[in-house]
Image (cartoon, rainbow, N blue to C red):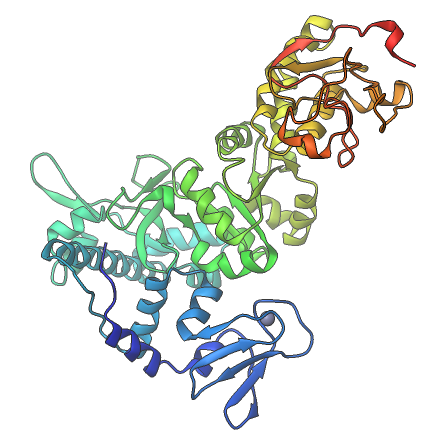
Amino acid sequence: MAGRIRDEDLEAVRERTDIVKLVSGYLTLKRSGHDSFSGLCPFHTEKSPSFSVSPTKGVFYCFGCGKGGDAIAFLRETEHLEFTEAVERLAKEAGVTLRYEGDTPAERRAAGKRGALHRANDAAFDLYHAMLLQGHEGEDARAYLLGRGFDRDAWVEFGIGYAPGSADFLLRRLAKSLSTEILVESGLAIRADDGAVRDRFRGRITFPVHDLSGRAVGIGARILPGGRDEGPKYLNSPETPVYRKGDVLYNLQRAKAAVSRSGEIFVVEGYTDVIAMSRAGVPNTVATCGTALGEGHFRLASRFAQKMVLAFDSDEAGARAAERAFAFLERFPIQPVVLILPEGLDPADFVTRHGGEALRELAKGAVPLVEYMVRRTIGRNDLSSVEGQTAAIAAAVPLLEGLTDPVRQSEYAHLLAELAGSPRARWSWRSSSASGVAPSRSARRSSAPRRRSGSSARCCDCSPATPTPTGASSRSSRTTTCSRLATASSSRCFGRPRGTWAPWSPPPPTRRS
Ligand SMILES: [Zn+2]
């Protein structure tokens, strides 16, 4: 980890950054005074400009939402960068060489190596891209991409390239500027057991991968059908000090503005899905890079989006991803929904056939991850018998136990009961805490009118023999006399306290009035 940036360098960055030029890259500014420009605020929705910039002071301020600060703050806010990332970006623009306090020689060496790994990847991107655009050997790759609906504009926008079949295409060209060690460590070249070094990517279409700050970190390479390479369909750069796949989402550096604006991020499986969707007008699309959707991806996505649409081409792929995603459900402030595309189409084929707008429409009906998991779990059971229904519910209850919001938990409990075909849904959870699961809507409809207040209030659904004092749970403030009774805010009976699932047993008949 590099140390703190020296104060005088920070000052130099602030002084040499033209804040009007910087802000103008994101919105239209008009002069509104001798030292002020104004425009529509990029941080909140407005129709008349309340966002103003002072070039001499080097600051911005929005009278609408109150956001303000210097050029560093503006870049951090718009691009969702860490402080150091924003400063480094501006320093590069302004031509300021940053020095860090307290860098040890080892840290300086590590920073130097990271820089070399970025340069190596950058150089490889350029060489492969040039080969695709005009190389003689790129002919088949060009024909393949055009055949799949990716035109030259797409190649340029996404920096797509072609790695020719020879073993030393890259090595020969980069040997002068980069050491063999760096080329091997970056994963662009591999060293065989006999010590011979050759290019890793041969006869493949290449997709450059960047980190959030737009630095070159790795390559995803697809085999060219009919080519000489007989390896796996996709070959990816290995993990390196600059490429940790669990913390990188392909295309996020490009997509983040669109993701922030819409609050929604589409996660697909392949590079070509991302490119096709983006070109079809769904720019807020990313993919994992040959690795399972994990914690780092959730952390990253939740910095920009409130909703994550997992868009997959088959139920099986969707199910696998959904199951993995479920582990992170309550840990990040983002709601995952599952979109299974019809006709077995992958996202790229779908948007090619039906357009991006149709995909957006379809995404509106995407199923929340919990519901998807509940449906899937229930679907594995034979619901024609009481035993089957019981088993289905028992299998699905653990899914709901992880939910921290009791209202959602209760909603899903109803869904679960209904899906399990248990029409009166008389089941609940049992443990020492006071939260639990309510019977289904149909069960509530069929029960007697409930009374909600007064000391004689009694839960009509679970009919506890004795009203339980409040304070038995954190929900007590929303509970009337009976802690099991419907709460005012959720209007619902929480049945027995939560815990292990237990078959419902009938209440004493005289209790129900
Ligand atoms: Zn504002």
